[in-house]
Length: 334
Ligand SMILES: Nc1nc2c(ncn2[C@@H]2O[C@H](COP(=O)(O)OP(=O)(O)OP(=O)(O)O)[C@@H](O)[C@H]2O)c(=O)[nH]1
Ligand SMILES: [Mg+2]
Image (cartoon, rainbow, N blue to C red; front, side):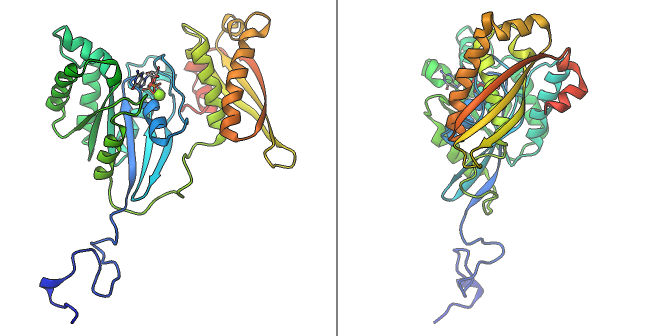
């Protein structure tokens, strides 16, 4: 006998004929966008890379490393979480920095769930000293999130590997007080601890729906963009003071040789700085600095492309590019 009455309707999302009903999808596959936001240097890009299990977004120990919205696609059975890495939220003065913060604030509006990444190191240090764990700058981020009325919120208390466990509790309490709806997860984005729990939280928060990207696609970012970023990362690692912040990288040539079978890729990139003195530093004595940047970048680009890479770097001065609307547009920042 087949059940037909309203009371014995199957509850597994299937109609009696086994086809999906409109309000009960056949499976509970989840798909949607998770925006990673927070202060500069909190570990957002490290978290993105850890979840993807591969390097997509560049990372450095200097703040304001990420300048663009970078999409990483995490596909597992039952879920596709499209992670949106964003620049750190900070008090911005230059046109470049304002554009960066704009990227982050608009990402908050555009996603299904927000994950606020907090660096536990300064937060626990403040707690130990009897001060409020969240700095005024972190509280500004909380306010921004609260005002955006985001549908779902998780908070990743990051760098847990660097702090004493008992001191995480006052930070949790401070976050919970500001944002009672937040699901708080202590993690180490670097080592991966707590990250599966965080991903489970996202799964619960994302809407039901089919995947939006093919399962083998891990990003929306073009290869050229990632290549330019990898070069910029080496400049962040190898130079100091204002140099990283005065630098942009543009790919001028990206040519697959040998009939496009990817056995060798010829890349020409131009590094822009704002002043002659900066150009001298980036090139270095006898070209030594540029050579170091090139050697380190080439290794990672080869890994990314799975091909031998011939990398040519040039350095040019482009005065005041960080404040020029036209330059920012051309360099992909506005
Ligand atoms: N020990 C430790 N270091 C971490 C962890 N997560 C990130 N870091 C380090 O923190 C620094 C900043 O990491 P990023 O991932 O670049 O931070 P971000 O939030 O993307 O920074 P911006 O792009 O500048 O906004 C790097 O030196 C990372 O190696 C962690 O869990 N533990
Ligand atoms: Mg970053």
